[in-house]
Length: 637
Image (spheres, helix red, strand yellow):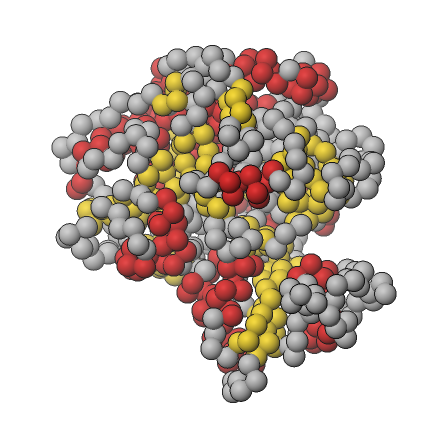
């Protein structure tokens, strides 16, 4: 079947198309209900089927003869540690950990928060939760205590699973004090914290609440896989919201399992026995979909990497892994390759390794600039494939289909064509479809395909308002862009105030709350400015109180410290610029969209609702003086 045939079949008869894909899974009970509609207007898939994704990722692979194959290659240059964990060994670890959680009273539907670095125990934790039907919520280890506390209160977990520390280059980050502080701040108090003690740093345990990772498993009975419904939640993954309150994206089990199996084989072109590397972290959706669940369900060997692209020990770290583990394909954000290129512009380190196993690489998470694309293509002599998806989708929405005989060729600036199942349209503000090559709102016509999120934890109405209200009958991605004459899709950027730092979507609203809490700050706006390495960086435009008595440098230092403490180092917040005024509408709303255009050095139309147009040149001058834009912008009067 060609791409065009499959794409049309997926839109004309989605139930039949996805029923065929579902037959590739080993269900405990095959689904009879294929496509159903929720009360808030979204669609779910395979709701009455029964399965277990941990069983699909482990037991099924062993039954098919892959017990002695490596499931996870753990590589940690920051601790000089390596391990090759077979499917059989991983299953044994998962069964025991799941049984230990059951002994503590964790049952199907209970929530478990996982706050861990990239160590194999983190993958064991995820798979063990899935095995007993517990709903896990992985929180990226770079988030500060109050961010973790917000997620604890929303998910109300029975357990927190953590480690004594994470490691960033040569710096040890103590996790346990952050967890303790989060529990102190949270209204909900989890029953237990399970701590994986690492040799680099031993945490002090509270005997009333804390348990040692390995001691608590002693004497536990290995747990069998619990059948769950296709519509039962597998995990909650929090993504930044524009209000600063994170959204708990809920992923179902049945549709997600079907989508991952499909994507790994067809989109990424991986087969059982291949070596796959998702160069990300389990705190993000890539880590869920294409470090843990997807590769294991597809019978691949997955790389579990605790390190960075540079300084671990040098900018050849990625090339070493590809060579050492004979990686066939990998996924990474462009920012990682920009970091490598900055340290090794001629690619001399890559030339020291045998990279012949590599067939192609995928990039996503932020815009792939043409210079990085050219550098990678020439250096590696393999296809460099841009594609696009979101936390909400859980798997790619546009990409070449590398598992088929007719993959769409890469096209500069485009994330390629829509994946079967995604009816992607470009709409104007009134919901009318735009002609080819004209920009608008990127939307997806309902129903959404399997694997796509269809609710927010405990707040289905918020999902409806955030994604389904602006364009009735469509999911609003929040991205702007256009299609060309051949239906290639071009993403031009976000249409809200979530910025993209090294592939991590972060809310400027969260940072504004922290900055505005400073006692000498009257008001502020945080915007994203373009950065050659990280894609975007946050910059605060700050208006001081009339009686403020602080130097600009001291204020900036204090704000950087506050954001690091309350949002986390992941925000990469380093700059605050004092301005006399912020542009506002007559009703008092800050004109953030205009500020973003100024910071991007783009032309803008003077808003008809602006209260004082003379403020905009002041902001331009402040950004130019700080080195964020080369010249001031000529606006269209």
